[in-house]
Length: 246
Image (cartoon, rainbow, N blue to C red; front, side, top):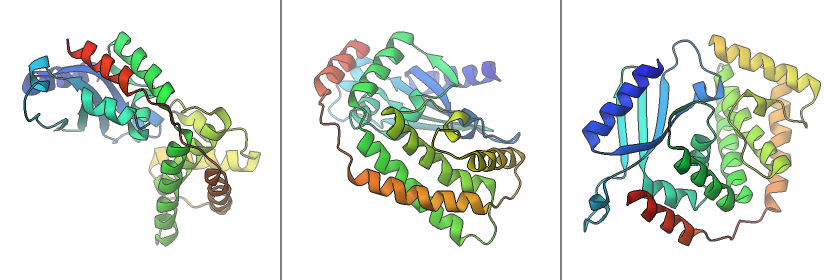
């Protein structure tokens, strides 16, 4: 499968006339929550030749392609760096994915360093808390619930707790569900919902519903006290961008 993905990346580079600097797995496979039939969600950061950036009107800064069970989404380097300066959660998830398909080590290490400098716990916490609240409403309104629906609430909540405890963005993976604040009962329920998700079956859990409600309330109070990261790394990102396209 790895070879097939590499062939897809090479084909995209050829068609789009780009160079892919970084590519990873996103979604359920990155979290190890996939089912046998799950698609591959490939995400990448790429650059054009220098002349492309010197046009009066730059072209589209996103690529989207599908190859059977492979979905590829990529962001142009300039777009990625602008979003990184805002501590974009989606980009952070890409950088901390455990499954990497293309990796320019110098590029990735510098990007992670910038991500650490620009990381805004306040902004990212609000993003995931909002996601959890929205998905919880859908969960409560559903006639029948699935493990996937529970996890769509639990995952952002657990990311929030990790950020509060570690003051950093978490590496992507199942470990996020077993943070120190969870009781043994909740940990067991977490294990159950993960197993049910991987088997694709329906699921319901009163302990997890209570946990979700209390967590949303607790995190809401903590989020009120947060502060944004006011550091400005635009100059460093600009210098890095120029270095990468030259």
